[in-house]
Amino acid sequence: MSQDLTQLTAYELIEAYRTKTLSPVEATMATLKRIGELQPHFNAYRAVDADAALAQAKVSEARWARGAPKGLLDGVPVGFKDLLNVQGFPTRKGSLATPDIIQQADSPPAARLREAGAVILGKTQTAEFGLKGLTETKLGGVTPNAWDRQYVSGGSSGGAAVAAALGFGPLQVGTDGGGSIRNPAAVNGVFGFKPTFGRVAGYPHNGSLFHIGPLTRTVTDAALLLNVIAQPDVRDWQSLPSDIRDWRENLDGGVKGLRIAYSRTLGYVKVDPGLAAVVDRAVARLSELGAIVEETDPGFRDPSPIIDAINSERAIRLRSEIGVAGLDLIDPGIRARVEKLERYTLAEVVEANERRTDLAILMRRFHEKYDLLVTPVQSQPVPRLGTPPQTPFAFPFNITQQPGASIPAGFDNNGLPVGLQFVGPQYGDLTVLRLARAFEKLQPFPTPHLDSLSKL
Image 1 (cartoon, rainbow, N blue to C red):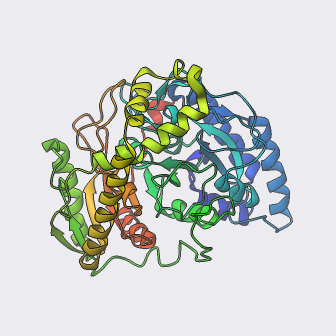
Image 2 (image 1 turned 180 degrees about the vertical axis):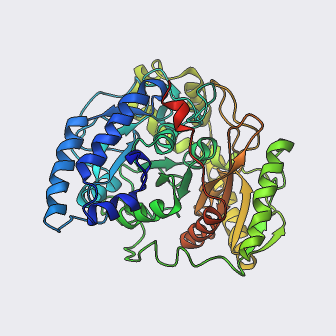
């Protein structure tokens, strides 16, 4: 067991609680101490309630002492992106235009984790309304990269990715409407998983592109988290039916014989040569696992117009939420985007949904031949603060509602993480997780240099 309790995985914490070599109070206190030390430098959380977290940990400790844990993740610290409602915290969505009102009810994933006994730490920073690939806002300030504070953390789940990387709680819950889990996971060197749409229930609902999923340091921890949050909720009529499987089962089953398609560019993305070389080396290792890798493109053109038209619904909801006065408080770039999206006509939205259907059918046919698709996540190295990372490989698979993951594949020329994306067919979540786990065992995921961080 690591001497640094904040580097223990959720799986290791549960085993330590079970054998009484560690208590939830000790783990929570260590996590809060780490947050206290590094939060001023990395700004991963928007709000932390240390007193409430310790109170939850003490109750959990008593349950473990009786040999009666409440659920699978009893006593494990967890954070939530500040787009998700958590009882006892305001949901500010990274914006000055939102009210500072305490939520009285949990979102579905928060409710499931509270029922399982998890220790809720607080709310992580997000890009404003999740509408930008950069976690830098007027409300929350700047959340820099976990590996180098001169560079960006991505977005919109930037706070969650940085928190996962730095040991601010082993389990972080993020959202992904166009890459917002995979983008920051890639640039911060953690595992980010976007499950099939509806696998994790959401409420209030944010449209048909919006997925909720884990950001963790290991694939096993993501599977553990899915065991709790991958449940339906009556408030989300699009959530999938109850699936009682243990997502850890067959996680180590290997990928021998899996047919994997590798696309360097999806047929239309220009990728930095140095970054492409890192991805190529990582993909070459998949053959070592016994997978059958073939270079090919799915065969669709840039679907950016599709996601923009579909997001016009989100823009209309946002204007309704914040009102005319609220528009003056939001980031000018986001305001411009909202106003652009509102100009889409009904006919254009209908046409976009028809193209969405065509793309989804194309990918279903593609996966009749290939079990998985592998691509880069980024097209360019991690940029310095103020410039969003380029992650054009992510959003097509929100359009098709497929499961996708970003895993650490290596480092760019600046020593910053590079992400590799695994995409599975709709409902093929376990296959994605199995490939990610197999790669993780072959090439373990790195963590930021804690010795240098301790000297900040």
